[in-house]
Image 1 (tube, rainbow, N blue to C red):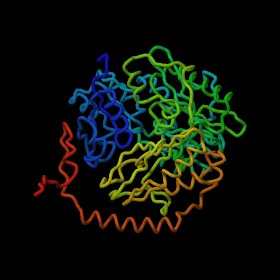
Image 2 (image 1 turned 90 degrees about the vertical axis):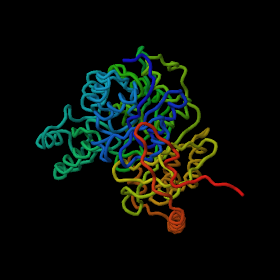
Image 3 (image 1 turned 30 degrees about the vertical axis):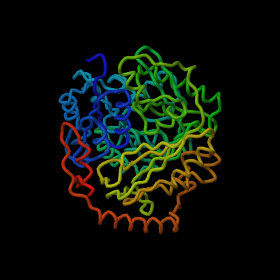
Image 4 (image 1 turned 30 degrees about the horizontal axis):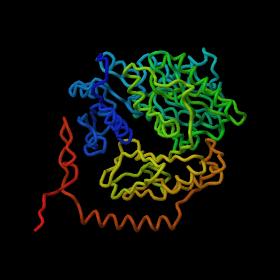
Length: 503
């Protein structure tokens, strides 16, 4: 294995691939993008120094195909792979393949990843370390009878979860024995599709807690720090949609206790690089270890804005076997940050994914506004991948300033051609319970189950869509050329063009 990272292949797509490639640029490290057939003109492909086609659209034939990713790294002489989040980011077999091939995996090593990336194995380790965990299965379920037996022991409602991965994929709340079989089968199918592994398990469903995670960094020199918490309780279908830091639920003492436990979790796991330790916090202030997310999190920007630490660059530094540049006592938070995830979802159709061509994008900007995006006007949003389009982040000196800034930024965010939940997010920000900081995991069903898009906004949106469609029709570009496999030329992605002269 090379001692230092010389070129990084980004084994992902969308906004997270763009984020990683930008960090590579700032560090002066060449980057390689990989893309499926439907991602030929995606932003991450256009931004990278090289781009390699790895297969058809289905993830199992492209972004989850280990052989093609390893071959792409070898062929482009990339000696490191950054997995981003999702896909193979928490797959210990992929990390082991990289190690065997002499490729630096920018994440924990395969042994630590096998331990913490596998939620069941992680729970076993934490039990031995006397870290409080949620009651549940001590092993992966093998057949329906085992799930039925365990659910009876735990007591309904129970939560079905994928052993590998995260992001709500494969997760189901099961309220009775009659619903268990269908939930297990559906959860296994979704876990297989998202992470290449169908293993699932059950744990007790804790009702109406807060979801608190601690960002951690650990190097190869026994240095472990946490970069404070993120409140991730605003969720829909177990998928986070709003995150913030600091949490309104933590005082100094509770923050200190949870931070110390988070570091202990990492230490007993032999974990290195970036990750998060997830907790559920009940109404009495008791917290329970939930899992370790052994990767960069979607919501990492809010930690970056409040601590001043670039987590992607820190990941690369740790992968280079460098020591962390700071100790726990050097770290502090300044101000408040909120992130809203922008999804291609139809608010009028139960927030189901919305596909099609993006006709026009206008992104918000200004002091304290950050937008991590994977889209542009003219991009086709397909059915094959997670519908996240971008992440809008605001920062301010205090929570209320940050919240108001987010409301203004969402009001300025325009995406035409497909449906998004921007209006929904804006109403979350303006809800009295959110303003008060009452953000338990039941916030959406409790406060916004009957939410409907405002008629005035919908009328404006319909008119804007018609205008954008007419403009797109009148200015249809020529057919885009195929992206070269070894490198990408942005001039090939802008449609028909020609040099003109002025008389």
